[in-house]
Every structure is written in C-alpha cells, then in structure tokens.
Amino acid sequence: MPVKPAGFSTLDIHKISDTLKDKKIEPSTLQFGFLGVGIMGSGIVKNLINSGHKVNVWNRSADKCKDFIDAGATQLLTPADVVSSSDVTFSCLSDPIVVKELVFGNCGVLQGISPGKKYVEMTSIDAETSQDLHEGITAKGGVYLEAQIQGNKAKAEEGSLVVLAAGDRGLFDECQSAFSAMGTSAFFLGEVGMATKLNLVLQLMMGVSMNALAEGFALADRAGLNHKDVLEVLELTQLASPLLVEKGKAIIDGNFPTAMALSHMQKDLKLALNLGDQLEQPLPVTAAANEVFKHTKRFGYADHDVSAIYLRARF
Image (cartoon, rainbow, N blue to C red; front, side, top):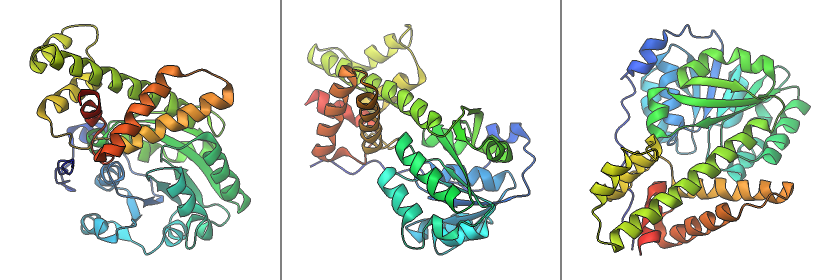
C-alpha cells in the first residue's frame, strides 16, 4: 500500500513573501470573495489579505478557513452568501464536476448572483464547462471571467503565478490589483474558452514532460546509474528547467510532497484529449502519458505529487 503524501508545510498566513513586498500593490476598494482554500487557493487568499484586500471566504471543510479569519478575512456559510456579500468572487476548486456543483447546486453561486455581481473561475476546466458557467451567470445579470492559473503550491504562496484570462475585459481590468497579488503576469486572451484551452495546452506539455522524466529516471535506475548524477548532469544541459529539476529532486528524495496533485494532472490530460477529439487533432503521446497517470492513480497515488508517476514507471 502507498504511504500517505508527505505533509504540507504549514502555511504562515502573516509571512509576506519578498515577491509580494516588491510589488507595492495598491489594493482595490472592491470586496472580494474566494471559494476554495486548498492547495492553490490557500496561497492566493493569503496574498490577497496581505496585500490589503478585503476578502470573504468559504471552503467545503470550514475549519480550513480559521487562519484566514484570524488574519482578517470573513467566513460565510455558503457559496451563495459569499457571492451576495462580495463585488467579485473567485473560485479555485479541483475539477469541472465540483465547479458545476458549486455554481448550479443548492446554496450555490447562481443563487447569490444578481445584476452586477461578478464571478471569476480559476479552476482548471474545459472550455465547454466555462461556457456553461458564463451562460448561467450572465443570464442572471452577472459578469463572468475565466482566469486559469499556471504555477504550483509554492508559486501560489509566493505570489508568482501566471494568470490566463478570457471573458469580460472590464472585469479583467477590475481584478488587476488582485491578479498582481496572485502572480507576476496576467494575460487577457479574448472570448470565453480561450484561456481554458491555452491552459490545457500547457498542462499537456507538463504531463508529457513528467512522463519523460519518470521514464528516464527509471531507465537510469535499471542501468545502474545514480539518480543524483543524472540530475547533476541534466542541470548542465539544455534539458534543464525548473520543472524537471524540481521534480527530479522529488524523485530522488522519494517523498513526493504535493505541489500539484497527480489526480489533477491526469484530469487535465483527459480534458486535453477531449479537446483533441473535438478538433480531430491526434495526440498519441498525450494519450500514452494519460494511461500512465491513470495506472499510478490506481496504485493509490492520486493525492501525491505528479512526480509520483516515477513509481509507476519504475515498478
């Protein structure tokens, strides 16, 4: 049986990263809401609070909001309460199914939407789901923006994510101080669906790269090569990248602390394959990578970091 993922380092709500300090952000006067304080959402909310923004929060596990309340956030009982009490509400959850339940379900986002209320979806989803959200929210007079994020847990805590947005340009402009707290760059890509598609393209590249890294380390192990030697040499070549170096170190350590859950990566590969099917674009390498991630999930490593794919490649 697989061991549980290595525990997360404790998030120090009051510690302000040098990245955030250097930005000298002038916070918006808008009241922001935030739904979901998980792996990514917790770091984002931390930086919103520490940059002077007013934030209402909700999480399915209410106890996870305690530290944010102590830091000045206001906890509300339901997603509908957050939306109705906020000018702009952000959501950062796990997958399209959970997002739809949150938006269209009982006491959900739509029940709090009224003319002029604004909603920003940050969960990694497909363009069709985003379009459904857009139609539901705008039908009630709300304003919609998809804002996909590139980065990991550490980047979220530092405030160095990359934001990919599409939808309402006016809402994108209104969120600039919040996006500045979250990341180093924010791009507006046009109509709803464009940001979700670009995000899936990037996630596809990451998933395939992780497979290559895992197979390379597995082959090195069978060939009697020392993993530390492999990584040391890799860092001196054109292959060197923050992703491969970081995940190579995780493979060597063998703990696989979750910076991005393996299950989330597999979900994004599946969504990318669905997009490929719609566009009749062959994605044979992605399909093979997806199968390896699926097998690793079945071994019990869904909640571990994506680097745990090495265990499937090795054994």
